[in-house]
Every structure is written in structure tokens, then in C-alpha cells.
Picture 1 (tube, rainbow, N blue to C red):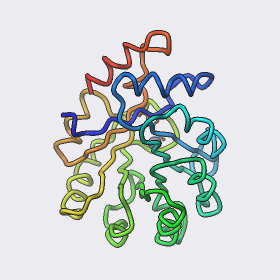
Picture 2 (cartoon, rainbow, N blue to C red):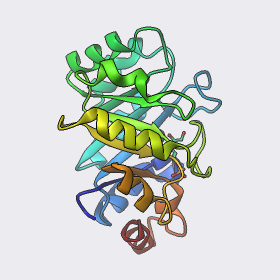
Picture 3 (tube, protein in one colour):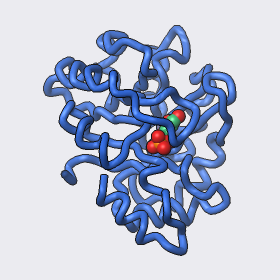
Picture 4 (cartoon, helix red, strand yellow):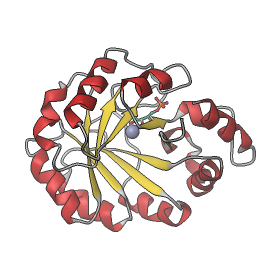
Length: 218
Ligand code: DX5
Ligand code: ZN
């Protein structure tokens, strides 16, 4: 179902070839490029920051979807917006003032998203829905690619679909999305699927057709 956006996570790409990897997956049918920013504090892994996003921007024709797994968030919002992020998603668990953070993302000129860890109840976003263009339901504990999908999150996705009603807010799923789990989350109401390993496995910038096959299989 191609009304569902596929957002390859470059966490699973070749770190020495990010620009070419972004072009390759876009050529092969990716809708958005998902950029996982980790600080070694909010999550137990470190990736890259706003300078990397700025460097990638000219290599991404479409949407740059930046997922911030950092705390605090607020001091870095302007830098990610200036780097050309389309969506900037912050975690509801990242600090005491997520409402202010989401307002600041909008004020900086980006589209605000809010993400929930698997242990966080869906009710935590009920009073944020007027501020966001995207809610990201984590279906693994954030920090690493290649983990298995947590099935208990399917109920959360369905509940979120109800809560959102006819507002124009994307429900994005992040973690363990593959050809087995994608139909389940789509049925529950998701319309944007992040996929790292399921997109990049077996392919490379010199063999990008595999990315196309992997995307088509999701
Ligand atoms: C996890 C990241 C995800 C991750 C998904 O902390 O937010 O975006 O890269 O990777 P897969 O699809 O391999 O679970
Ligand atoms: Zn992510």
C-alpha cells in the first residue's frame, strides 16, 4: 500500500557513504530518510548531530525525518532546523517540558513530532496532539537497529489512531519493521514505517537494486 510512507533509517547504512546511501534508497523508492540522532545519555549509543544533517541535506531530495534520541532537546532545536530537517521528533520522556519543546520546533520552522518509548502510555501524548504533525511509536527500545519488534505496541497504535481522529497527524512506527510486522502496524493504523535493517540488508551503493526489492517487500 503506497499511501504508506517508507522511511529507511540510515543507522543501518554504510556510515562512510551516507550521502550516496540516501540517494540510493530514494532512487529505489524510499519516501523519507530517517536520521537517528543519539547522544549516549538518553540512549546508550552515539551517532551524529546537526552537522551531519546539514551535510546530508543536499543528498536528500525529499523529506529528512530527524529522530532525536537526546536529552536535553531544546538547546539543539535551532541547529537541526537550520540543518534542513523537515520533521524534528523529540521523545516525550526526554524532559519535563515536551509541550514547550514542540512549540519551539514549530517556531524554528520545522514540523514537530513526538516519540514514545515502548513503556510509555499513549495517554502521555493526548494533550500534545494539537502541536504535532507526527507521533512516532517506538516498537523497540531506542538505541540500536536490528532489534525485534515488540508486539504489545500494536494496541498502542490502534489507541493512538482513535485519539487522532481526523487530525492530519502521521503515525510513524520505528523499530523491527519488516515484511512480517509491516502489515500488522498498517492494519493498526500506522502510515509511516521506519525500517533500517529490513531496507539495507544485502544491498550497497554499488548494488542498490537490493534496496528496491527490500522496500517493495515491506
Ligand atoms: C532505534 C532507531 C531506529 C532503528 C530502526 O533506536 O530509532 O530508527 O534504526 O532499525 P531497525 O529497522 O533495524 O529496527
Ligand atoms: Zn529512529
